[in-house]
Amino acid sequence: MSILFDRVAFIGIGLIGSSMARRIRRDGLAREIVACARRQETLDKVVALKLADRVTADPADAVKGADLVVVATPLSAYAEIGKRIAPALEPGAIVTDVGSVKGAAIRDLLPALPSNVHLIPGHPVAGTEHSGPEAGFAELFEGRWTILTPLPDTDRTALDKLTKLWQAAGSKVVTMDPEHHDKVLAIVSHLPHLIAYTIVGTATDLEQTLQSEVINFSASGFRDFTRIAASDPVMWRDVFLANREAVLEMLQRFNEDLTALQRAIRWGEGDKLQELFTRTRAIRRAIIEANQA
Amino acid sequence: MSILFDRVAFIGIGLIGSSMARRIRRDGLAREIVACARRQETLDKVVALKLADRVTADPADAVKGADLVVVATPLSAYAEIGKRIAPALEPGAIVTDVGSVKGAAIRDLLPALPSNVHLIPGHPVAGTEHSGPEAGFAELFEGRWTILTPLPDTDRTALDKLTKLWQAAGSKVVTMDPEHHDKVLAIVSHLPHLIAYTIVGTATDLEQTLQSEVINFSASGFRDFTRIAASDPVMWRDVFLANREAVLEMLQRFNEDLTALQRAIRWGEGDKLQELFTRTRAIRRAIIEANQA
Image (cartoon, rainbow over all chains, first blue to last red; front, side):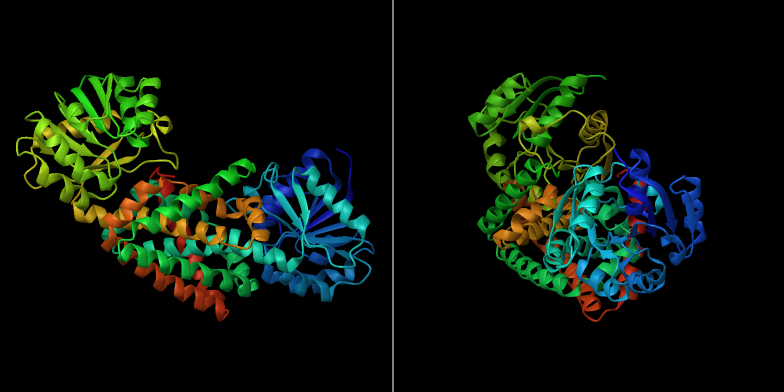
């Protein structure tokens, strides 16, 4: 691989940021990596794991001389980060992020940034239920999609450069309108997480006698939900608040469908149940065919 | 392993039945296996896979001379099977099943069976989203729980024999009251499946333009639901109809919790979201510690 950037600055370096850093190091995609985190504990881990050439707790210090800045914190920190890094950004630098809601990312970052940098919001659709810099791995993006949501006036050369980085990280890249991104992610990601958090919550509120049984017999379906519901709490709090409209809209549809199923169970309408259960098999096959299983 | 049964008859031989048959053959746990299925296609597969010594489409023929009969069909077939096998059962034979609802299994099997056989309902809490005899494998029950729900007057020797078989298959065995079983499974298995079927259904009803994106970006959470929602449609139709009361009760609790979360999102109550998302992480850790992850 050839060097694509001179200095990459990560503002926030958890599962996603550290996976990017690992890949960039492994394949020599940048000359230098700078990592910024709020907590000393995180910076210590980054140093121990040798993920960056330099670490700092100051975002402005981190972005100095960087031709790529990757914001990889929970969404609620974006507005403050935008303000902090703005005066220190290099003219011509690319500023991107990896957050799960693109409308909010643009709303919170764009107003603060100087007009001589390129904001190109991004979202690698990959992850695990683990968090923190120790959870990352260089192969995380292999075969997965990264969605970039450039603005109408985004510079083509900057967009190409960022696209090349994600492709070099193993990702397939697609561009999308930010609003459309947020709608798609509401159904494929945000609603599933909300449902998983809810059902695991319902189970933890059960009588104590049922609790240990829930754990022992979780192999029967529940287990998959607990994996999803073990995802980073702060990140997900921010996602739901930042994508409120789209999530509530999808939740409304889900609720209507669930009510219909509930009614079919109550009235013993087996044919309706079987019809739906047969239909849902097809989408699994499509996912397997698309190599996303 | 020593021989535990002389002749085991499987009435229905899909994922679970064929996994048992494979294990019994592999470890020599019975002298002979007879498999019964309604469809010739299934019997052909059983022959091709060498899962049984003899196949038949007639349940009465299958159970002749068997000291263990395993009913492994969808629940809706139980009442008819009970009637068909009753006259042909050997005195002293053990009749068990592997269905996910024990109240209904007892209701449908017990009245038909002669008093000189031992009905011991069972449920191996293991499975995959695949179905049919080709989907089974000998290790399916390894480290998983099998729940037996003996009746108040169940013969101890018969219960011990069946327990030994499941242990020899790699399973941990626990006995439980049938009603309690159905309540536990409603939350750990039936509700998760219902939710997964619903959300995948909601996604398949989306506008065509969103459909392919749902598939491409499924790695972000949705994918896990599609796996669960690819489970056998007839088996699951029967489960929901057979465990209606307990499922509707758990669904009610889930709905209340979901409404509370919906409200927290609408009103931007981030602290409530974060509190729940933190709490749900603990149950994942407990599952990992119980070696059920």
